[in-house]
Image (tube, rainbow, N blue to C red; front, top):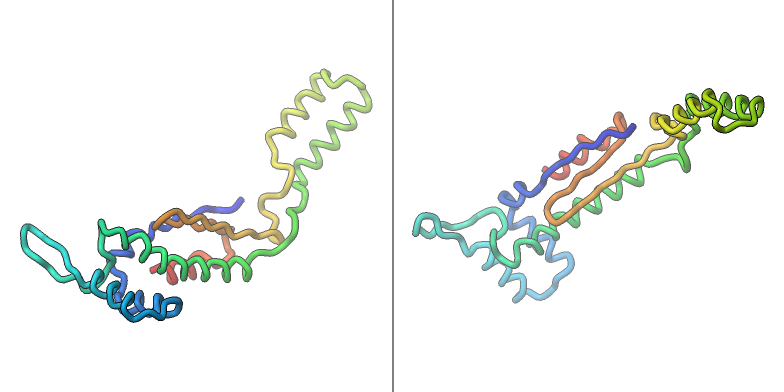
Length: 173
């Protein structure tokens, strides 16, 4: 069965490098005046106990720009995870679960012999079938990478041993 590993990247936005962020924006935005406004918003600073402090890293928290600027960074993470997905996913369908197939065949034989779906053995085998996955959850030839992003949170899911977890964590850090 695949294991999930969540990574909360929200705290990372307190340490966004302004030069990297504006560099990412420059890839899509050619208007120097607009980029200058972004620089001003990033450098606006904040008040701490009635004292103005400069901000040299991070996005302006509480600003309407903060979620948009966070999404600029997260878009890069989205693209990276898509590359991981293409690299690590394999297989079209999981193979059948051998334990499920065994119980299913036993149930079919009992049903053929008795003709009674209410027979205690048939009922027990039906119960066992319902408790087992029909497909092999540990099929090494079927790997899927799942990635869920909501605002500034992401929860990548990977299959144990796929190697994508550490790569993703290095990229997200």
